[in-house]
Image (cartoon, rainbow, N blue to C red; front, side, top):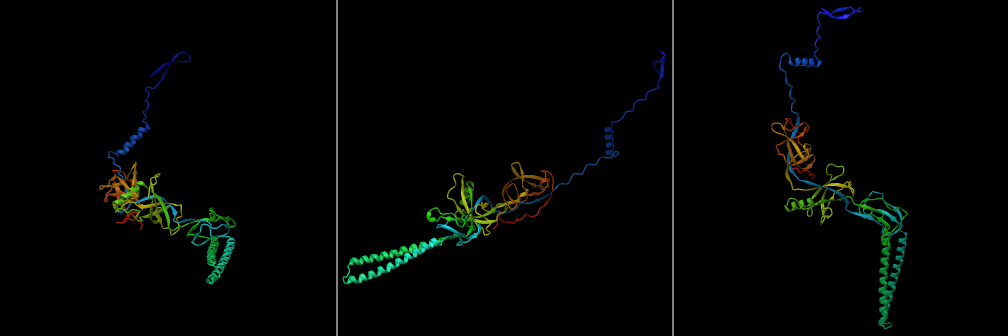
Length: 418
């Protein structure tokens, strides 16, 4: 077969010999399609049916039934501690301080010596008063002898009755002078005693505010100098304010005979200090104010608390728990089993077919890890207490029973430590 003609160098037409046929370009299959075909061929298993993946087992969870027992609700308030007795130590007499006889911040007992004021001026006054008393007594003796002499002479008319009356009056005046001198001497001796300032009560003393060598003013001047202060520690008061709603609730319980009034009965309280997780001190209510504060709508209340270890100081804060209801039967579950769903509280319950159900509940007070459930549960329900994050509503789980919670004894009161 000849190809098309071409012109040579000499201008003559030339012919080029070509192949008799043109071989077609081979067709290349894309690598992606080839890979899919190979995978499909492998999965086909030479015509055998494909096997399905095994379903995962139900997740394991721990369940527990609610504990049923008699509980008593406790209301909590924020309180501040104050000393039962507090005194500001001031001198009764003025003078220069000789010495300070206590250690700052130590425990002192009633009658312990605290300060010594220079007693020499008062000792001099006492000696003067003693001399005046001796002079007054001598005048009494003289007046008595003159009166006796006058009474003898008046019988012989040697003296008149007027002279006898004058001598009798002189004796009475001498007796009065003795009484006055005795009082002056007693006051002088008291001033000497007051130069030794002692502790008026047992408690913890503050720091000394006056050092030796300083002049202090006594109470007779009207502006006595503050030397230090002492507060008693055992027992100690805790003051707290009760809101009006709680007061009305307590009054209603008292009228119904379900709770004694704190005005008539020393209702027990429990105190939790800062940094503590449970009450550490016991006490009792001993005062309720006679009116509500019009600015805050609260009632000032006071409890007296034992402080035998002296661990509480006036001015501290504490959480005060007060009995807030009559004893009643309740269901309790571990507090870790309670979850929050937006604005409501729920627990996850395992139904008889081992599927999970979310149950809304109404919570009560907490007591040592157990939460009172007022509504939403039955005593036979199985509540998930461990593995809540693996539970899904409507899905099956593998439940296993939990150990009995601590303190789950029938008849025990929630929060009752006594």
